[in-house]
Image 1 (tube, one colour):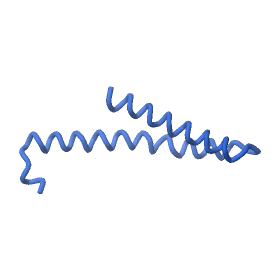
Image 2: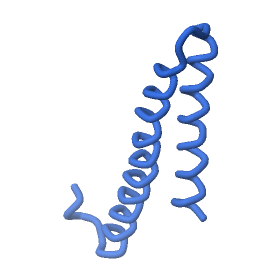
Image 3: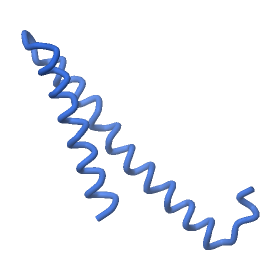
Length: 70
């Protein structure tokens, strides 16, 4: 199917794939960091641990958007 595309379309498709990989690669890096830090918070409620995890994933999304799209 990809052989039917023109060269410019193939180049655009590979650029889009690279963008998606960069974006989710950055988010995947921040996810385990948030998981580890949320597990280091001892004696706190589960809600606070989940909020800490979501904070790091959110920061990962924000940084990924800034790096990839701007």
